[in-house]
Length: 280
Image (tube, rainbow, N blue to C red; front, side):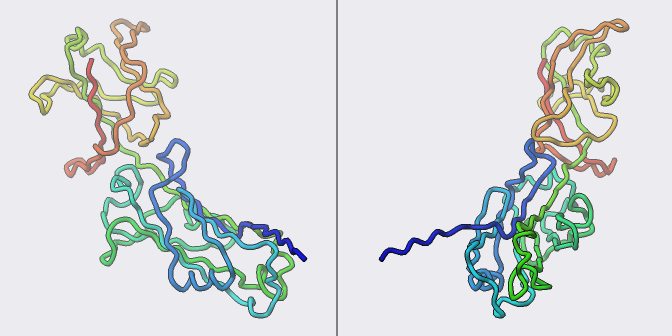
């Protein structure tokens, strides 16, 4: 006699990491680690752990009978996240401290594992025991035996449990250094940078003459307010020549979004800047 047993998997819980810097909001800069005690609990319940680039998923056997007294009581799950991108702080709105630990925990009635809409400074602490950007996630399930145990009939109405961690992109002042052999370099008073689709919503200073690191002449434009760093620019900043009122010529349709590797903090102005060099 042959017995066929079909295993049906059911998502128990997931933790997803998002970041406003990335075009698709998916943050692949962390790896998840399961703490030892939690791993023992996971084995006891027959839970499968699956990692995706920006997500941790816990999966259970949908056919498994958890309606037993041995499954009664609160389940505590503790995880760690470890950052693997050395440039992470450059484009993330967090304290510019190389070693820090982020406290993330379950909040009743909330999918986010932090009180604000994004991870904020108040849950970040400088760490002396671990290097880099890390986080500790503390979750608690089954406090009222709503998932496992003798009164777990409501389980399917609750699952899957989904949690999110949101990071915000850093807002900085943008610098564009203009240089080259174009004839417009001699008519710098007529050059402007702005977003044509929403004119005046993003403005830059007039050209500031300076000597570039290579010893050549150049001009500097600085945004008059902070702008968000994005993997792909969400504003189309162009370089225009305006010689007469209501008349413009387009030189560069879309200026590149500055590379976050160039982010620096100016002690004198106490502001963050990012820069890009443009040849015309």
